[in-house]
Image (cartoon, rainbow, N blue to C red):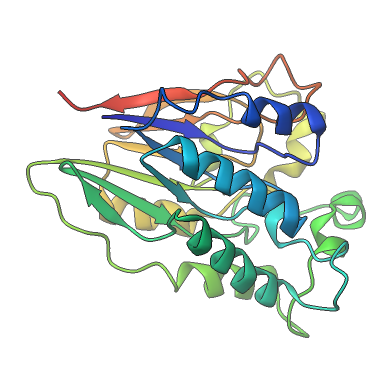
Amino acid sequence: MRVFSLSDIHVDFDANASWVEGLSRSDYQRDILLLAGDVSDSQQRFSLCIEAFARRFRKVFFVPGNHDLWVLRDAERIDSLEKFARVKALVLASGASMNAEVIENVAIVPLLGWYDYSFGVPDRSLLETWMDFRACRWPAGWTEQEITSYFIDQNPAPPRVPAGFTISFSHFLPRVDVMPGFIPPAHRRIYPVLGSNRLETLIRAINPAIHLYGHSHVNQDVVLDGIRYINNAFAYPHEERIAAKALRCIYRTD
């Protein structure tokens, strides 16, 4: 059994959707896919993508990203909490899962989260341009810290695998130092909306061998304080330098 990682597939782009449809229907039938968010804000495209992966893999595990909770294009006026509920229903209907599970002595632990400015304070330009602030809709008065608490508090205690191997994954970054040093200073202005230190607290309690994350679109593989952090974002079609645009096997059983 192999465990593959992928995030930020963004099937709103036809090239990305075609890549998903082009994946083998036979090569991964014994394998697991960890899909770390940002599939599409379109419920139709989201459903088609999740179902396509579910047909190709033994089991797909998913956590939503910020794009999956956008509501601007939804015909009905719903908020992002209702969108989250619909995303969960679509995942369940496809045969994929958002719950922790042990398969062949490998514990898979999905972690919900958001960003709470623990990586820095957003400047005025970021507050005016970051799309989530217009594309998501939350209960009146909710702050980013309250949104983060809403999701963090839904993460159950992970399964224990004393003699096994544990992999956790989230869409949002658990610590800002997973970002590589080559990021230009001008691009670091988005760091406040990348993740939350509260995710790192959860990860340390779980103590996985590997934590997979997405959101930044910058592929990474680094060991920090004894845990291996991996980002394997597919990203936007033009982001070829920072994203490998391929499934990545991050673990295999003997």
